[in-house]
Image 1 (cartoon, one colour):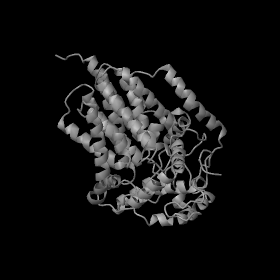
Image 2 (cartoon, helix red, strand yellow):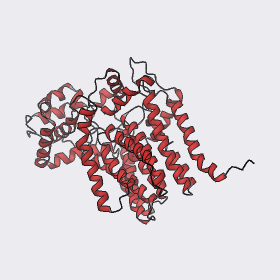
Image 3 (tube, helix red, strand yellow):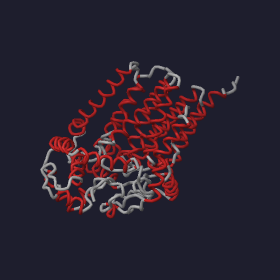
Image 4 (cartoon, helix red, strand yellow):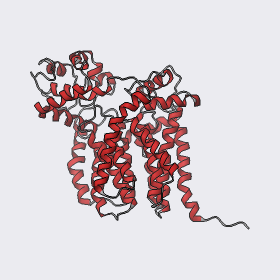
Length: 480
């Protein structure tokens, strides 16, 4: 005798079915994936086998392993979109099983936010981090949210995904350490903090050995970019001072050639006069450069704080022009000799939609940062339990990564903020609790209003890379 299907079971499966369809549609929309300049450099390393650590070696080695399945960007695009929608699907399914189907649909809707999905169609380390991080979170959250034991195979798979995510971006540990701890069965707050710090220390200590010994990659000077960028910023802001052994006139040279910009560090490498002025720093080891930076930051704290504040303002996209580059997903793939094609017209239309959205608070990292802070305060009133704990872990993840940019960041692209954006959005859904109206109004007046004024009065910057190398933003905190 045939039994009637259980409607509740059908409703539970509907989130997984919808996510599968969204994955298929996203894959078709962005196929074979946008390839940017960094993408092509990694692909060259994957096919040649000559891998260095300027870009994440683990991504190049994974790409190399996938070459038998097909050349070009398609294999990695498939993986990052699969992880993206799998993670969201598992969180949505868990919420539905907890009797919150609408929250489950909201979690899937987060994946359709134009800037988030638009950047997920670009084969880059940032999209790889989001895909792997979401998949790992979803695998564990599906059990944790319902207080169920995690099968060993699921735990091992999530562990591998988190390990990949930690290696695919140098600063990913600041985002993932608090989230991983939130997913572990650790109850005491002091123990959680200790575990998070332990993960940070272990990741920073082991990543170099893994990259160079396990993944067999060559060393580049990527680790020196941060101290060189900040030492140049200090030199440009201390006229007549000899910084880190550089001649006293170096600061004037850096200012004259627009070498120091809060937008990105690139002029120091790609403008000949700037590279020549800082050539003595290139001869120093990473450890020596960081010791020099610490010394000069103590000697010239105002100059160092101005350097970091100007860049933080730029990367958080607060007091900036309306059309600040680096927010919109690419319009076309980078020209290449490998036959990697650009996605079709439909992807271009989505990119246009994403571009418009990035001019709203959806594309302003500082607005997401403020939202995470407000939600963290509102979470105090939520009922203790697995849902609140995961939400707090996601908020801590978003806030920790954004806070790290105050000291560790050399570029202002929106893609660096994709993880905090999606983590904050999911935390809001999990909490189902909005901040107080007074707190929202305070943020609007103190943060959003000045941002709107800045976008109205600051002139648009150049949109081409070569012109950006010579652009000095209005809020650069440089001496006249």
